[in-house]
Length: 205
Image 1 (cartoon, rainbow, N blue to C red):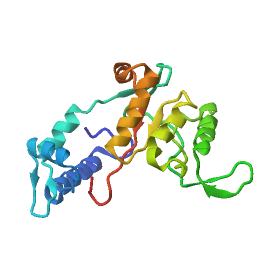
Image 2 (cartoon, rainbow, N blue to C red):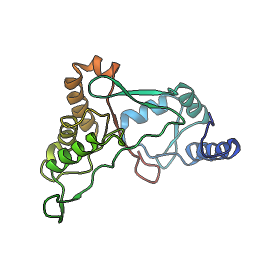
Image 3 (cartoon, rainbow, N blue to C red):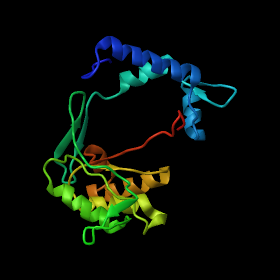
């Protein structure tokens, strides 16, 4: 459990113990009824302020069930990135509201064409193992994250790290990826994208 490249085992254990205490005693705000019900059904409790308190045994069980390695493929179905302790991969960032115009050199709001152009550059560079959008366009606000994913998948064969803000976004992205893979089962067999999602600080999901 405490295999770390950066910390001695004892220091890794201290961080783990502190994390367990925060989850057990402070808890997290969980803004999703179905997810809350799943947590409570698995043994978590809810305090007077509405925070979900996650017990030690739940965390330990989750860690035991976590896969030690995750294989990602490229769009063509060939093995690419293998996520495991001790491996490092490089790629660009995502969701930049502004881009420097490649023709004028001026800073301006990002567009979908920035996504496709940026991704083509990263696709051609061997030093990058995966692709992110590097732009959050202003020109398709209603289907923003699905549109960005479509631009990425149309311009690279490398594994994709996608962003989203809702379950609907993820469903749209998954639908696009399933079409490209052939169907849902083929995508499940050889996944070529993952979602980059973050909680809202502090401790709100």
